[in-house]
Image (cartoon, rainbow, N blue to C red; front, side):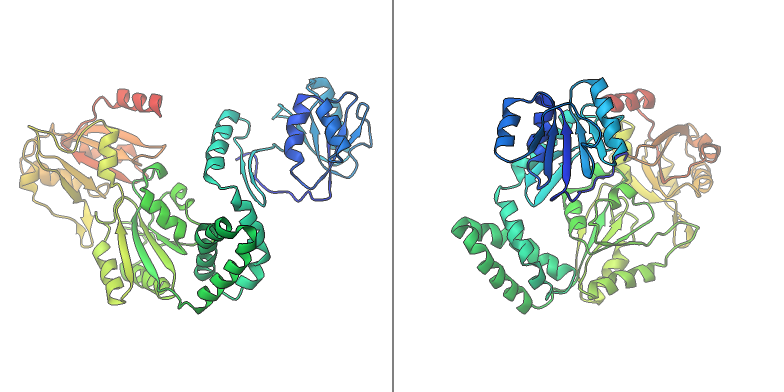
Length: 463
């Protein structure tokens, strides 16, 4: 992010604009929505700018800009539609301490003006750092359609009532009140009686929320998928949006954690095979403790919580504490990974079943029905198999598996740094060691990429 988005206080402050043509008018239409004191400096101005000046919306200095014109200005816009003149006036503004924007010159501008959705005081700013203005306009149109015109009025009235709502404790109860107002009671009151009906509704609603007993805590056991935020389910996104506390495992990506509310408490409860870990009993206790405090807790697990996620232990702890919960499934790594090699987990005439197995469990390397897995046509997805690769390879070969059985390793499934490594059972080790895998990996026994290179290129073309 090269431009940090902020909202600058401009009420009563000077904003100066050099230029009097179409580019200047486009900026002024936006700037006149503010409470700033606007000054236009230009020898020639359009009739529309003349009209705005006559209406007292701005002041016009009818000459070319000179030193002293931007003294005490908070912002300055160079909109002369002439590169040399814009550079000249920008230098003056720089010297006099104003932040400078040169229209259609991202490189020399100190700030940029985003596309804005105006529901004053609710303002949505959309920026693409100059890379895609058309995209910014499309996003603006979409948001415009979603936000009702009454939203600004409700927000202004709600702002005057904020001090009264401080009687509710910070956190979930206060957030529930405002959600009830903005998405339920407020729009209904405004639709029935207009602005006059909103304050009485706020007072009645606050009394109801004060009298209500505190809601019991709740836990969502959520699958975060393999790493790509776009593979999250809508239900998972909604849970993250409501969460007071997010307790996540080591493999949940930062991009997914970014989707949680800014006010949420984020707790890393990472567990690593054969490495430093938080004990499962401590994780169970942590989930229960936050839920008993009345929080909405999201226990966020990479992939799907029902697949090698120790879900049953967490459910047992919640049931023992009489805490409500729901399981929100996610896309498990096997499903995402097999899609990325252009294959199917099952195929008519090849295999009518697929095994999801783990390379190690709580007791160490996990044993399986090796004789059945070694048969021709079998397909297995091996989770947590990096450190146990030689053990699995040896067991399969010992039980008669064909050394030429295809093996595919996918590291960082669905992420930008995903790697696909094709080999055979005979070369499974040392291939995995030589690959120097540092991210989470899943191994497919019995599946080869469908022309992995071509398939990867095809995915890039349509991404």
